[in-house]
Length: 443
Ligand SMILES: [Zn+2]
Image (cartoon, rainbow, N blue to C red; front, side, top):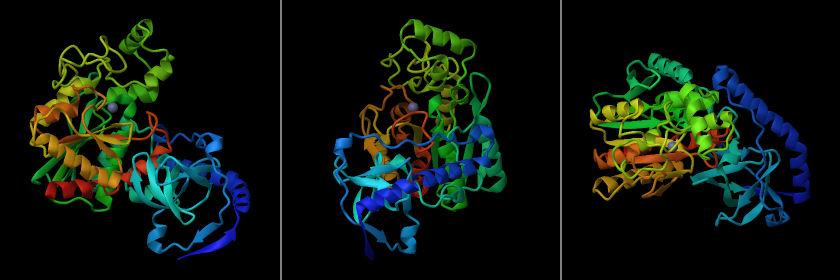
């Protein structure tokens, strides 16, 4: 199917370097256009993507001819392209050996996601590229799969409320919005029910419990928007989606602003030597609620042993008692009052799935099978045991106290808050997520 164009590397490199600036300009334009429909608060920050940096000596000289493939129509739907300034690396199937450089504008046929990598075919050869250094060749890939939402890595509380209302208006028979309670600062914590309320299965999904991991709120909303518009939902399940369990914290992280008690917490952390960040960076990396309680350390299971930080802080303070925080109490009350078939907590980052807590059965085995079901479309790898919280997390409590199969989904690769470059692969991994959950419920 593929013919050799007999173009030597030197030509391809010259071509790629010549194409570098115009391709980069196109990439920036695309991002800006995508954001113009959103409010300023939800615009994608157009930070120029950087090129992967690896030791230069690990890059072998490219001496092979470049194949110009003739894609089928089905394959054209799976074409991705480098998202960088000049080139990315193609790794061998062992993931560590670098095979060649992939220039800007190159066409990569996507096969599957695996952890932080994507398995692709480039130049007639399969190999791995870093997942957040590629984007779909089709610049409308994300927007054409969404009806209400716009692409955003700074997804605000107000935008979420507006999008929930718009989804409810667009799908009045399938979407209902209510509140699970109020945050410490009095913000409603909305829950969006998607699907048949009389369904035999109910699944809870929650995100942005950790403030700086606010991209999970956009992702959960995007998953539901896409699933509604693509008609992926079945009558078998009703989803209870709480995209932003910690709205006060998200506002702190996104505004990079500390108020009142947060300023005192910052001073305390500074004096304890717990942080050396300036106040804006400290606020941006905030994980806790507005009072300095880490909500994912405030749940009863394992709370006694969870003693990482003795005082209110931007992260890792468990609170004065289990469920002392308004947000964790609201989430616990909402979970306890219903018979959920599963809970999924969305955090970042790591590109992994945590599924275990304690040794109770069969809930731990069922959690593992849920993780395997989610691994299928996302490529995130299941990991048992330690989930970064040392117990006292929501998932731990749902497994331990309520016997609900539960997992933590850690999206993103390298940094939190996520970068703009993480949006494309993260969104694409979850396109077939809802059918995978449906299948798991049926098995
Ligand atoms: Zn987290």
